[in-house]
Image (cartoon, rainbow, N blue to C red; front, side):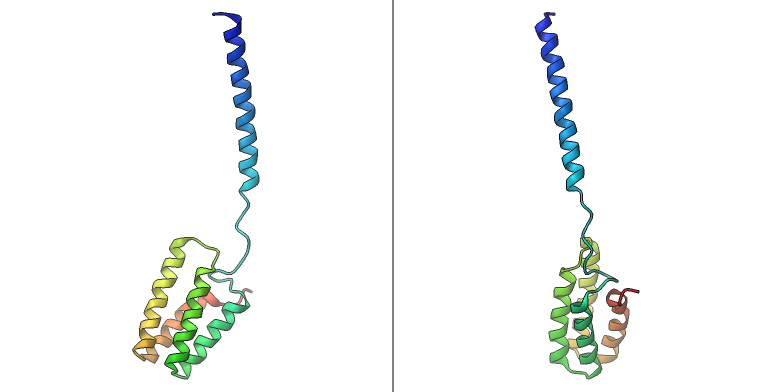
Length: 124
């Protein structure tokens, strides 16, 4: 083997090592944690307001206002900083609640709303 080939291999290994280290450092810098924000159990003021609107509409047995509040509730769920499985479960629960409101089954809707309250509780 010639000396040139050995030097080229060492140069290649050194450049590759530095490049890998640089990528590793960049990857670590880019892995910031998810910013705190609205989510299940950590609602912001808008989510709390929408929850209260929905609660009032269900207690008043007002189908139109309840459906409007449910649309806002759905938009809140899509703003959550969480994984897609949690969002899918919340949307499924919301669809059940929407169905109960649409059929004007107020007792059932109220029970479902109480079950959803844990997702909209004020942080303590």
